[in-house]
Image (cartoon, rainbow, N blue to C red; front, side):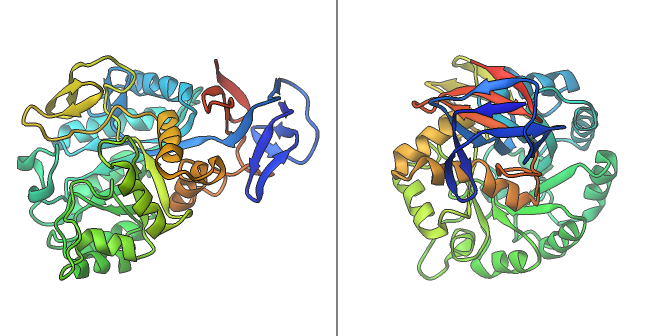
Length: 374
């Protein structure tokens, strides 16, 4: 494959150059095969969504391999080249069955947005900050026994776990999960500053949808929010204008800088669908004007796409496309330790999101193959 004529976003900035691909990797050598004329277009690393519960009428919880593939196909139209499926706290049986179906996809030859891993959002979460989590299924004590079952079933493909630092045993569980090579995020929590820092010191790397479903800052007790902001942890941000208003996105960016912001969708099955009634795990969800809520009014995920998130980040903050793109590409890849993703340079996987001047997705390329063209 060869991509010609575009403005290419490389680690050191924009470059008007050709990009060559050999055997699914970016190469220094001229190559033959498919050619994309990207004249007048922006060539970015492929978008990575680390936290999503579904799209296009498919809920991750209980989804079949076929359903997960449907999500992957839709995500490719939004510029996403890699993603993690987020399993909301559910019964062990449903969680295990969802893990088995996800493993089928992860270990298969994928032809659209690549499902890279499994995110467990719970069950080690605080009832007081449960959001859409079913309270009766939350852990009262962090016990690695259930996680051992999930990890064994996942065949090594659980990559990300969200837990609350104040749950007894959370620090030890964080340390154990990190030792398994699993990235730990902190959220759905009323933890104190000290409790949160203890988990970060034990290996936690990020905050889950920061500012939502967590104890907020107080001058006498900075809480989990203050600890995530002050530390080197990454900051997940749902940039839909609802979960975080523009001023909050600007504040987070000013504190965390260009390198620690990670855009997520936290999307549910209603993403890409009209308003109506949907599911999020065991919950009934009502979507009105694109806003997803439980019947009691609690916000329950989003209908955001990564393509829309990029535009919102620029609109909300005024930062450049070059800086905003890092939130969707380089930063999530670095956080997860995926060294071959998130950058356009030789040796990296040939994943590209190609945008027009209005930042609409024109092409999505995965492993050197065009999987979407507008």
